[in-house]
Image 1 (cartoon, rainbow, N blue to C red):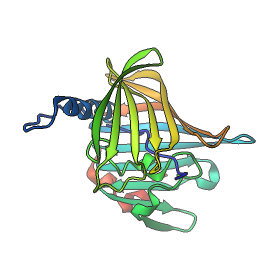
Image 2 (image 1 turned 120 degrees about the horizontal axis):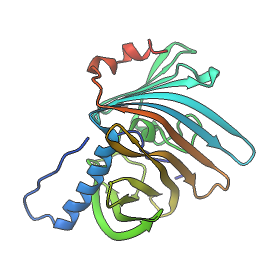
Image 3 (image 1 turned 120 degrees about the vertical axis):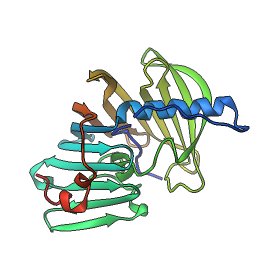
Image 4 (image 1 turned 135 degrees about the horizontal axis):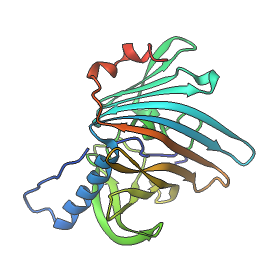
Length: 256
């Protein structure tokens, strides 16, 4: 499997504790809770972001500018602002449905699940990475693998295995989440043959409002030397009121 995946995160997540009863091991509970805290920290109740994406190849580079809005983990809207030939393209996620507005042909397209693993606009991220159809909390089982130092910070190392019911391209994801601020600093993505396909590194920690977040995310394919995609969060605004009606196919056609 050659397609890239998951971000970033990358774009967002709000804070709560999970209480479980039954026979599940405490360690399993803790691993899922850690992933949820990391997700919640970057998402918030709502978020608005100004983003730069750099696509880096051995012989060329190009840049895109975007705005993104999220509400919880059900709603995401992404507007491409540059370059000129792609300006006005919009991606919308409403619960499990994903839509794409293409102004050049004045057409709205509903993306099938089979397209979520494909490259997003020529980057090393997938469609799913950008709109987060899959949930890193709900769609995976989680297991502790110990602790390791990443970027000089002690991190929980957690294995994430997709649930049988989840339509996810990866056979396994391993994440490193720092023990102090619950920031995801690294992730590895493995295909169905157990081969490492992509490495994602997160850095440049900044504070927006009351939230400490990583603002630079790199996705690096392991089999393509000199290939890399970088997402930079230039500005983030959290917990401002956004109506559900903002996240509609009607509105996506009106965004500028």
